[in-house]
Structure formats: C-alpha cells, structure tokens
Image (cartoon, rainbow, N blue to C red; front, side, top):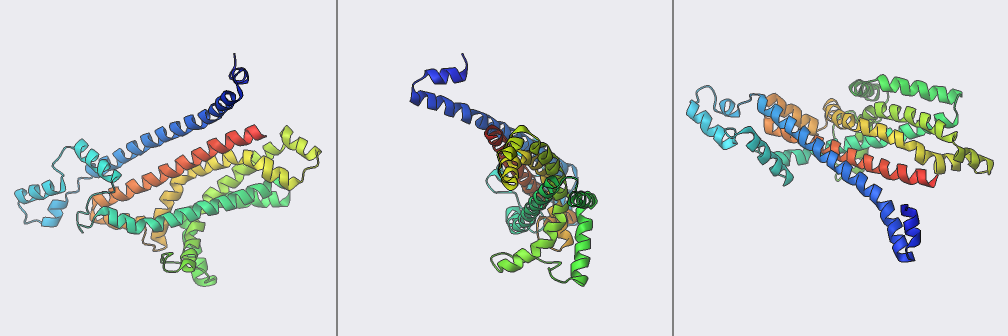
Length: 341
C-alpha cells in the first residue's frame, strides 16, 4: 500500500499529519546531509590549515629572544606558547578554543587573535557580500535578457560581455577600475575604508569598486547558466500551455519559469563562493582596505602563525556557511518550484 493510499485511509487529522511528515522529511533529510557535509569539510580544512602552520617551522621564541638566547630560554618560551605539546593536542585545543571565540594570541604583539580578526572581519564581509549581490544582479539580469531575446543582437551582446568578463581575473579588473576612477572618472574612492556606523553613504561608495571587480567572473557564469536553463524551461509544456492560455510573457518568465531555471544558476554561485571570499581577501589589499587580507599579509611576513591560522579559520567558516545557505535554498526552491509547475 502506498503512502498516499495510507494517508487517504486515515481519519482527517491523521491524514494531514502523514502528508505533513511526507513533505517535511525530504527537507529535513537534505538539511541534515548538508550540515554533515559542512562539518566534515570544516574539520578537514581547519586540520590542513593547522598542519601547514605547524609544518612551517616558524619558531617565535628564537625570533623574539634573538641570537643571544640560550636553548633553555627558547624552550621555556616555547612552553609558554604551547609549542612543546603534541600536534594533535595543540589542534584540539585550538579548535575547541575557536568554538568559544578564543583563537589564541599573536606571537609578536600579544594581542588576542580574535580581537584582530573582529576588527578586520567586517571589511572582508562587506566586500564579499557586495560581490555576491552584484553577481546575482548582473547574472540574473543578463541571463533573463539573453533568454527572452534569444538569437537577437541583445542576446549576442550579453554573450560577448559575459565571455569577456569571465576571462578577466579579479585583481586585473581591480587595477583597471582604480586607473579608470582615479583619473578619468573620479566618482568612487579608489582606496580606504569607512565603517558604516561612521558614514553609511561613504561606506557604500568605498565598496563599489572592489565588489564590482570581484563580481565579474561569478556574474558572467551565472548569466550564461541562467540563459541556458531559462531557454530550456520556456520550451517545457507548462510554459507553452501558459502562453496558449494568454498569460503575460513577463508573468510566465518571472513567476513560473525563473524559479525553476534559477536552481542551476544558484549552483554556480555555490561554486564561486570560495573564490569570492578568497578574492575579497586579495582585492582588499589592492584597494588598501584594512580587512582580513591585510591582516593575514602582515602576519605572514612576520611569521605570526596564530594570526594566519585565525584568518584562515574564519575564511573557511565563511565559505562553509555560504555553501550551506546556498545548498538549502537550492533544495527548498527546486523541490517547491517543480512541484508547483
């Protein structure tokens, strides 16, 4: 006996509960699988990060004490830093401390790593968020225009623009934008960062150029994927039937076809999420913004391993969280939209 037949045989309250469970279970299963994958990726990535830091051979005690230090002095300071403990013990202490907000202490400034990361994190988060929003805006606008005007001059123009945008690295686009807006069109600031609590308008203005530079590649891939998917969706029977029944073209595209066709495009955004986060760290260095990239760059030059590891851990967490959100949106949207269609 099928689940539907069983539900029909039950009294009304029990039947409604059975149908509700049948609808909720796939979403719950997808959520649990996504969270399990995210935790696994996070543990493996942080373990690799910590292992690379441990394998670097950096010895802060020798650097801090100088050449005149005795081996006893170096050993004593290494004990203070906890470097004389086994690797796995140090890793578990580090990851358990990170869960409570303790990322250790800088070897050279003695400032808690969490404090330094907390100051730089809003900058990188602002750039990455701006890049994601612009990529979605550019990608969905270009993909929809190209799909509804398939074969036209507009379609070819969008295809050409996305092809060119996808071949330009973010740092090259950043340099080009700096040259353009520093000399030819001095509209946007080309360096520096203004916190939103200080001046909201200035904050938005200083995010425009780095966000645009980061969003080009992702926006181009989203537009190309959305065009292909949307063209195929508009050829399906439900879209053809909607046109026969006289529904407005805009309603067919935006209300019925786009939710289904957007799932592959969101998958592309999930692939680009690590690049957007990592690109934000690089781009902010070019634009002179005091984010995680600047912090990691200074720490790496000094050999300040705890700071580098703290920055990498936060970056990994951002990538994993964005991936989880996108996967849940895809699972929810895809299932709901297809059942509705």
